[in-house]
Length: 96
Image (cartoon, rainbow, N blue to C red; front, side, top):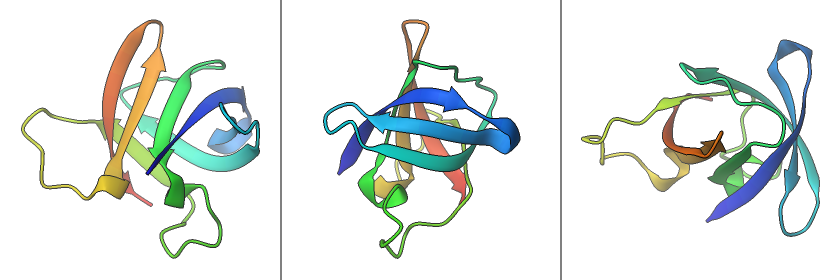
């Protein structure tokens, strides 16, 4: 299950302050993006387990890169999405 987050703030050492679009709950995650530079107010969708410290899948930090169209053998938890400057990117988690 995906959660849709707005980037509220980007701090030193790639600490992202994210806010759930629906519940307004805030999360602090260490994120790295290869080949893409998200900015404040961009929209990021992640698997809900990646933001839940109680989940066995929660590990910090996470790194993402653009997803190639021919990659379809990934688990659902490894997919993410980013909307920036009216462009939509499909991302895959490469570590974390």
